[in-house]
Length: 219
Image (cartoon, rainbow, N blue to C red; front, side):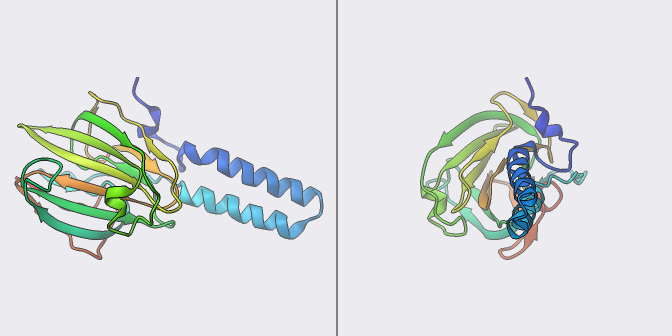
């Protein structure tokens, strides 16, 4: 069954509701006890959590061959990989995106296709802006078959604070460009490995938005 969260119509991802409710309940309790400083503190925490889990509607660009960003954040790396160092086992392009606490954390599909494989890997929780997090941190790998024998690999990587990777798609599922596929809680990183024929249109340091910013084009 398709997860309804990929078509969310609420302004916030449902994963945030327990956190917002918990902090809000504590704010009410402390307010009733006349502990106003703690009440306002937990109210502020509840509001920040709601902000963190925000899930704005996004309309992907209708441009043939366009690959859109899978995450909001800052581009850390754009580089070419040889077949021996690429997880796709062919000449590829790698794009890394760092999501801070203040970025939208709902992830989106970069290109239409079908989910061929999903592989969760336990690991460490180094800061997601460090290169070693790519190899050592907890991660979730999604192999996307885009047709004509080509694949895109998406890697959700947990960060220093993030301790939960959420994935809402399943193996064999057909997906569309810009569709929600998951989120990572509280600061993290998403990496994208693209097949031969991809031409990047972004550079390190650039800020991108999931589902709308074009990262480049596939021939």
